[in-house]
Length: 337
Ligand code: NAP
Ligand code: 3JN
Image (cartoon, rainbow, N blue to C red):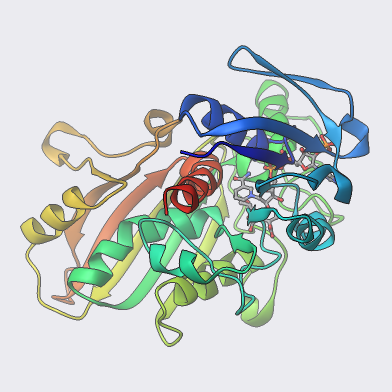
């Protein structure tokens, strides 16, 4: 396979560092990897799996000669820099929300809608982490039974708020009186402790009393499943967990099903592991799923009233499959196609 020059923009962050690590561990066919971040980090040394990277400032010219650029430095940086990278010949795989709902940009999870990779024109968007984790589990059900309704509540780890989110939890666990400065949203004036607490707000509030994170789950799901009419409703909650997002998902299916059929479809699905053994108290928990590539599904049970209603408990490492791994898998697909 042809070797390519790769850039990671946001290399000093939680997602960027995971991308660097995956590029090394998955034998991604790179000739060179350029680590980019803001001016603040220029010159900083990053050690990932025995390899040292010297961080460079992200400027348009830093993308000269780059074939694939992974962007994970936030939406405003993507808006400023993605087209500059494409102009210089790179394909941008963007982890931010900057282009997700742009009708000219495909939004892709390889296990869900790989066909959409064919029509990109330089930028491919990676969905929000909570959407990715949900859809890896639900796409096989959509394919075999059809989905008519999704109701989801998330339990999202603090690393979803980046390196600073993790620091805040660790500090408050040691000292519950430490001042809250990051969560729920760093840029808003009001902050709440996350240690020994839950915060039912992820990102800022948007229309109809839903937060932006909740709207992302609705709109991105409809786009990727090519079902703009699909009924999706979400409640997203920050919990004092370092890594891995969990989701309690209720779906209504279009066809009758048996629980054995559901287990069979999910166990055969790419990227899904079924861990569902109530007798032995086996179900997915964030602490066990850290650094795992797959999305884990447990607590599979039928609704007590609606015959076609199904409850699932889904856990995935949101920095890995929810962001970095999904982006790297998109890169791998582009190269193998
Ligand atoms: P993070 O830990 O806060 O890291 C942010 C990165 O962006 C750092 O490398 C930072 O570099 C860089 N950056 C910030 N401003 C920049 C600028 N003006 N120019 C160039 N680089 C700049 O955040 P994260 O958790 O890795 O998330 C990064 C993005 O990934 C998010 O904004 C989101 O869009 C997406 N995402 C995150 C998650 C998650 O679970 N964390 C999941 C899905 C998607 P410096 O060190 O120089 O400041
Ligand atoms: O909070 C989480 O658990 C996930 C956070 C994702 C995130 C954080 C800041 C900006 C995103 C995202 O991926 O949707 C963005 C963004 O790009 O809008």
